[in-house]
Image (cartoon, rainbow, N blue to C red; front, side):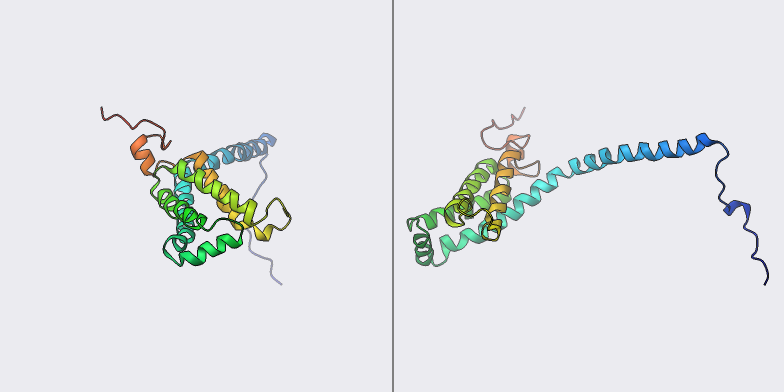
Length: 185
């Protein structure tokens, strides 16, 4: 059997004769590994306005979807459902107003912090009174969705709407209601 052809010198791997050369390669890898998380964090930091916009849009759509039937659907049936849960019947349209118009405000990014805290408060009451979070905290399947909505709305209330919002356009710095409008000077 003939022997294989020789490997050209340009394709041969040879360990460097200088042991420090390996150290340089390792230090380069270490430098990149140390720098990479920082670069990744900077990329994520630049995506924060997009993430706040997407969170507001998703929450807004969900709250509008759940608030619409309480206002414009079979209101009598919704009132009966609320009464069956131990609430006065007039709470149904009240919750509908908070959910529907709060969702619209989240999508627009207008009065976002106020809408977020109202929606988070409503979801907290739902977690407490309807889904019985405190009575049986191990029954996660009964309260996972309203818990996610509550926390998401609270995040929007505390983090603010971001720069892609009417709040930022009107008040600047994304702080929302409670701030003086930007001066036009």
